[in-house]
Image (cartoon, rainbow, N blue to C red; front, side, top):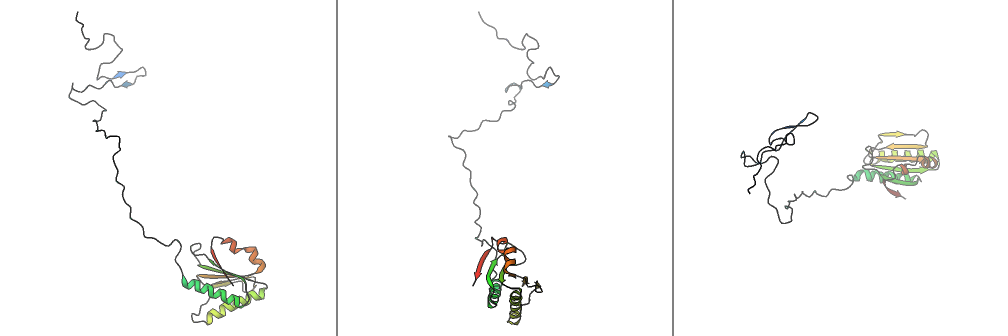
Length: 195
C-alpha cells in the first residue's frame, strides 16, 4: 500500500503558523514566522552569508607596517656651557672667601628659572655678607661685567640669594642651611662638590 505525504498546513489549528506569516504571542507581540526557503521565490535564505573557502589550518598572513626609526635624541635638557662656567666661577669666588661645603646643583629641566644652583655656607653673618660682596665685585670687574638680576638678604647676612639668571647662588649660615635643606629639596638634581 502506498503512503501519502502530507502537504500544506497541519490539521491541528493553532500549533504552528504557516510559513511567511507573523505569529502573535500571549503578550500581544507579533513574532516573525519562518523565512521562505530558497528556490520557491528565487531568493536566498535570509541571514546566511555565502560560504568562504577554508584555508588549511592557517590564518591569513597580515603584513606589519614598518615604522620609521626616530633619530636618537639626548635624554636630558640641552647643555648650557656658559651657565656651567658661571656656576663654577661663582663657586671659586666663594672658596676664595673661605666658604664651607660649596655644591653646584644641576637643575636643568627641573625648574624654569635657572640651570644651576650654587650653595655654600659660612660660620658667621659677616662671612656670608663678605662672600656675597666678593662675588658681586669680581663678576662686575671681569671682562663680561655681570651684574645680578636680583639680590636678597644682604642686610641680615643669614641667607643671601644672588640671582644671575641661569645661575642662582644661595649663601647660608651653617645652621640655616641645615634647616632649609635645599640639597634635600633638589635631591634628584646632579651635584658637583667644589673643593
